[in-house]
Length: 242
Image (cartoon, rainbow, N blue to C red; front, side):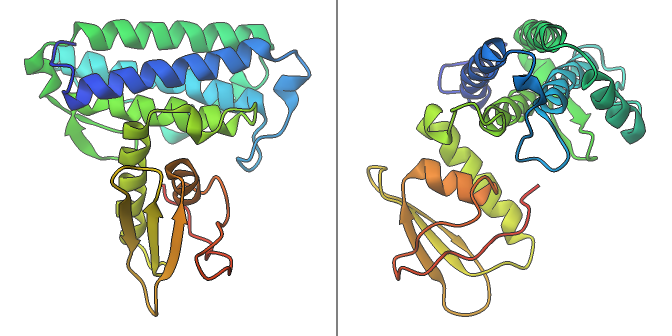
């Protein structure tokens, strides 16, 4: 995938590389019993989560082929097929899951790298029905591997990822919360220079939070339920962001 270093797709590819490495390194350190540990995602063990991330790379690869060939290729044949694939993956051994996650990530990277600028501009449709240019696929993957590397609960936190990734993820989460009824919150990342502030619109006086960017991102994406506020009271719990 050609483009200048500052190109959004190139930045997302860099973030994808970081997230993939963190995710696969964590998987490689698990023994068989560790794959059976529960994750923060309801009903999912690490096996479910690794299967989901591996299948996501295959599914995004379908969108890459769509962009490259012009032939519509959905991410998944159906929602039922997607769920069934995760359940099949949850029955695999840890070694099989890690191999699948590694193989699918590598294949996606090759496919993305081969896209031309013209192909990146082609519209594709996500599993949620969103229409977007193929140049956004690297961001979808970066978000997937980085957030789920945290969900593995293997010692990887949001502070393991670049600040520019966290800023984009936080901004996206704020936008998504803004489409729902939520509490009024002002969030300031004091470890950025200059500090950056996001606002969640809602009824009443806003709750003010000043915290590191990684903590704010965790809060906005539901990876921590609440943060300390400037008044000392707990921050309001937020609805799901996706």
